[in-house]
Length: 241
Ligand SMILES: Cc1cc2nc3c(=O)[nH]c(=O)nc-3n(C[C@H](O)[C@H](O)[C@H](O)COP(=O)(O)O)c2cc1C
Image (cartoon, rainbow, N blue to C red; front, side, top):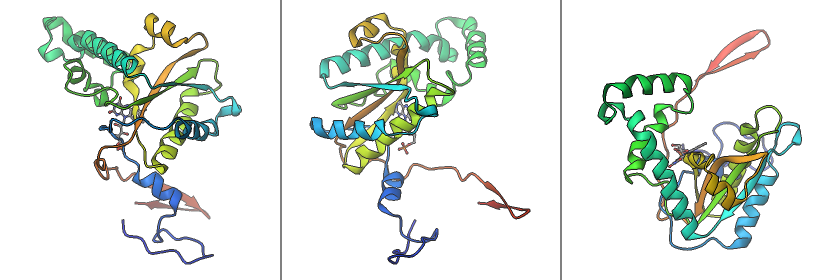
């Protein structure tokens, strides 16, 4: 969207130019191709610091981060996520499942029981991931795992979303690329990874963020729906479109 430049000392209107913070928010895109160049440690620390200052319910900060910059380890995690996808594929891709007619009712029941967990968007990607057609960590040289403290008050996932988004935006402001990787949750119950990463109660894997220098410029603006906003003021209601 074209915006006019904002005059110094004036209140911005919706038509004025985006300020630097808004620009970072609006221009960030998920990056799925990374250069073969590691992110300097001080930059990662700086980005984590942005995450640490995220808001959280009761200021409980129901998250912990694990940074993985070991190529072998990231590849091994990717392999195990794919293995989980191969186990789920016969149920989710029921039309072509070797389980035959049983697969459809099982898939429907599971989707009904776990509507968010097995939502066709994005979990429709699981069969492609199982077949190696879709990347998991997209070749990023650094992976930040966001762990959830299960004792967190209210909805700790929301806190983790705040923390992760601070990380993602700070990274973008430094010219780095990121991609949230929700599929990493498929390793949550895996005892090998719990042991290897030293994850114990009350923590569990919640989300991942792939981090690195992007190859080229990512997709451009991914379409966003226009959600109408109801606005109540002085006894009247208007709808922003
Ligand atoms: C919680 C969460 C989990 C996500 N998981 C994945 C994932 O596993 N793999 C992936 O490629 N993208 C993942 N994404 C990225 C979304 O696909 C992306 O944000 C969305 O398509 C909008 O595109 P944009 O980020 O470029 O604006 C995830 C995003 C969020 C917020």
